[in-house]
Length: 558
Image (cartoon, rainbow, N blue to C red; front, side, top):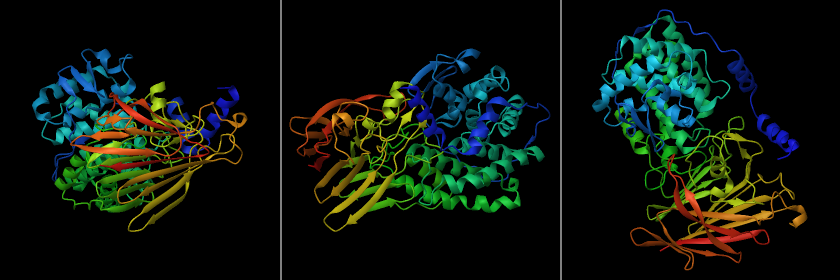
């Protein structure tokens, strides 16, 4: 990329940032605060019910052996906490202490107590990965949950916990906002409830102030978390459920002016639970739009069980027909044995697209309770080529024009020019449902192409019509970034036995998915599927050329 191209990419990335993000980054990097190690607040007595929170799969396999992101590791020795050979996300997980509240945690309490003691001794404040604000936030909550489950933090651990809250109060992630700032606020609220006294109350009030500001923005009217990732939505739902739980456990801690805010949490949870149900496949797990994978957030079933333990009412399941999450930009179509989830959404908030993929107008499809057409999922973070590929358009069930991405994803968590949808129309009759939408993400290319897609559902199956319209003729002289044709991609779930010759994919339990391609050329190519971090599965992808600006394909179940 030329120097001019790099400058343009930075311009189109930075132009959307809020002033507080820019100023916050300067302050965060150049003016680290001092950590005062004076007297710590007292532990507040528990005065209400605490119920078991969501649990995750165990990650501590031995006293000094663990597994995160499907990668095992030995964590003996103080150097393990900041091992440069480990990915940053793996180290973050090490510092979260999720295993304290995982399945069977009571059987590993001696390991947990020793690991907490090790952390205190081997991570002096405020240096290293463990003192970064995000892992600090998650660890504060996990240590408090562990204590509330009937375990006892040592005096040294309690002192460290208070120091972590004190440090976090001075290192809030205003430069990032979004789910990071929300996690900071939740941790301060937990610490402010768990401890008592003026300093603890200042933590609680600061956390509640941030939540009062962020909740109306981060949780949309239809219940979706504004980063448009089902995985991060599930994490946000767990956060609000945890806040309800801790407010029940320490009711006297809440200052009077903030009780109305907390009283509104159950209504927010109701909207969030419905949104999550809409964005799940019949197998009960989340769809893969933007950064999404199974195993990071609690499963939807565990979140439902947690809400039940908190005494919250059931959320209605999505019904047959069309469910339009208009504020988020997703559509669920449920007709007979078919469930389709359509992405007609912006990639995320303009000032915070870090978890966005170039997946505009993609979709996922389940048939007879099985996933059949899937986006690629997410298995890595970081800045490498595989991260970029998984965020790219060709890893999703949509159209890549001139071999380019519909939104300019780059780095690990950056987006320059991005796609915006327009022209959404839903025509629903008894026999035929037609959903049409377009996006302008390729307007930066010669000819200013527009991608239009139409999903047509009838009693037997689904037909997809794609059009790429340019303002000028599509000739080699006006091509975009390479010489390949525009192409549509349809990724099959790896459990399907795909036969390209017969245009049939066998679904387990004796069912089949059959497809017919229009007049455009097509071929079957190898691909990969990533349902969890650290996991890659071989899959197949139907690649269809866009001829004369059009292509079509029909999928039927059998």
